Length: 427
View (cartoon, rainbow, N blue to C red):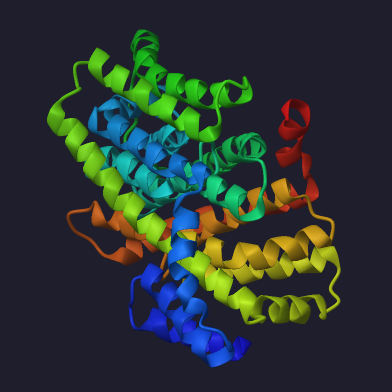
């Protein structure tokens, strides 16, 4: 049964079917093969109950929030301010790439949106200031991954729904690892450009007056972050309600800066609908597949196989890391989460791992999948923004940042309080 499911999944992905369709077709194929009852008849009820989950309403709202900030021009001004403050470091604007990604991640909740937003503004600077192209592109792809770790994060909402974990606690748990990971990305850039100074391009000189004046462009995304996250921890709003507050704040900021137009709103809503439709198709198809796998006993069989290995908690964590790294090379990250977490989370929590801590570790592993070939989504996003050049440059440039992601996993394993201290203090 297990071998049949794996082979069918690999065949469907190899046929280049959309991931949502592949997961749904796999569920429909496993039903008549291993079930005595027509389980596929429950598809309509499952689709309705999954799509009717109140917490998932936060997903289109967070996407819309990022779309409005992007189309209102806040990203470009934010990047310019970051460049004035960080370009003196070895690596120059590559630090601005990571800094701007960190700040935009605190409003968008999406890694793809973060990479696309910062990349749109940053990529034209490569030739202008003569940066090493692969490392510069890699810093954008890696910085974009912060969008799913620093709150508010769409993927943390998904994890919370799948494991019945507290989303506010997950958001708190992601803050320290998220900013620490951004710092590690900057260390990678700094070390590389200290060894190879020519990779760092030409420095941008800015006076203290210009830097201080540029702070005003960092205030809008910071204000949105405080509004969204602050309203959750003040007990004023649920994550879904906080997302709606964020959208309202973004619209008000767009109006204040005279960027609010019917066309801008229409484009933002259209982009939100496209992204939401893709995400919800994957969520619904994966929920149907999980239902089929559970009903035919596949989930229990796989759990017993893994538990039967008799591994210690430490070795099991290593197995989970290797599993996600390998799977992330071949599977889209959101569908990978939805399919695997119902299997992995119960096993790991049974071994004594905290589900909140585990959620942060899995999100970091998902981040790794975003910048590892051949299916690293952020690699394709950054490459698509270029006018010329090969995909290899983006892949090579992103590889040093994979080391930083492994380093943060090691730090989380050695010091669990990096993720658990804030939830314990404020939760």
